[in-house]
Amino acid sequence: MASRLKITLVRSMVGRPEKHRKVLRGMGLTRMHKTVELDDTPAIRGMANKVSHLVRVEESQ
Image (cartoon, rainbow, N blue to C red):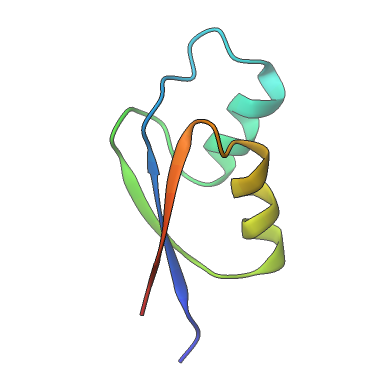
């Protein structure tokens, strides 16, 4: 089974650049403390790295 990532928005996107907002929306994060579970792919890892200062990433099975 492919591994998954639990990504939680822990800092607000208010006042952040539009690029960061688009990355967060692309991952399905629209409001504070929302958690999404996504497949662990290089694309998702790259998106999480772009906004690493705004999100918490945990690995799950």
